[in-house]
Image (cartoon, rainbow, N blue to C red; front, top):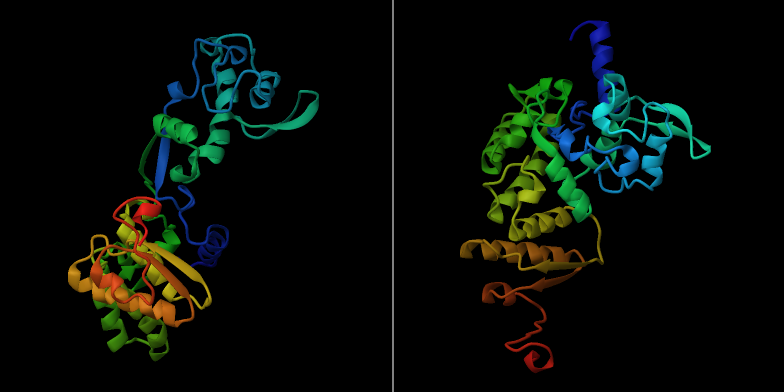
Amino acid sequence: MTSATGEKTIVREAIYHGGMCPRCEGRGSVSDLDLTAIYDESKSLLDGAITVPGYTPDGWMVRAYAESGFYPPDRPIREFTKQQLADLLYKEPTKIKAMGINVTYEGLIPKIQKSMFAKDVDSLQPHVRAFVERAATFAACPDCGGTRLSESARSSRIRGVNIAELCAMQITDLAAWLHDIRTHPDDPSIVPVVQALADNLASFVELGLGYLSLDRPSGTLSGGEAQRIKMLRHLGSSLTDVTYVFDEPTIGLHPHDVERMNDLLLRLRDKGNTVLVVEHKPEAIAVADHVVDLGPGAAPPGER
C-alpha cells in the first residue's frame, strides 16, 4: 500500500498482531466445530444438554447460562427459537445478573474457543484434549494458507522471497540462499546478521538435520531430533554454569554425524556448563569425562 491510510493500516496490524495472521491468531489452522459434540438437543440445560468438559448441570458455568433469561433452561434445546439458540451459542459479551451477582454472559462457542480450542492441543488435560479432537476439524487457515503470518508480513520480500517461503525451504536450501546473500550483499551492514544465521543453519546440517524446514511443527519431531535442536538452542545462549541433560541424542544419527554431535556437546561443556548424556553408542560415551555404567540387570544388581 502506498497511501497514507494504507500505511497506517499495516503499522496498526503489526502493532496489534506482531506479524501473525489475525484470523487464526498465528496457529496456521482454523477449526470448524461439530455442534452435536457440544450439546445434546434432546435435553434441557438443567438436564445436562451441554456436553463440554466441566459444564455440569450443577456447576456455576451452566447456572450462568440457565439464569441468563435469554431462553428457558428447562426445555430441550431443539425447542429453542432461532434467536434463543443464537443467544446460547454466539451472543456477544453481555452483563447479566446470575446466582445473585453481576457476571458477563458470553455465547458458548466463543467461550470454549478461547478456553480450549485456541490452546495447543498437547497442553490440554487428556479428557479436554479428547473432546477438542472429537468436536473440532482443523484445516489450513484460508487467509494465510497455513503460514501463520499476516498479509503485511508476507508482502515483505527479499530478492522475491518472503519469510514464509524461506521457512518452508529445506534447511540445506535455505543455507545456500543465505550464502548467496552473504557473498553478494545488497547492503554490507547486513553481513554480520546473515553470517550469524548461516552459522546457526550450518550447525543444523552438521547434526544431520539439514532435511528439516523451519516451519516444521515441533510436535512432529522425533525424540532424537528434538534433543539435537535443544542442544543447538542452548549453544547460542549466553548462560553458563547450567546443567543440561540429554537423553540419547544420537537416535537416528548416521555414524559419521555422531562425531559432529560430540563436538557440540564438548563446546557446550567448554562454555562452563555440566552436560549429562544418557547414551548407548560407544562413540558418544568415548568423549565423556566421567562414565557411569548401569546394567545389564536392574536396580543395585545392575550397578557396576
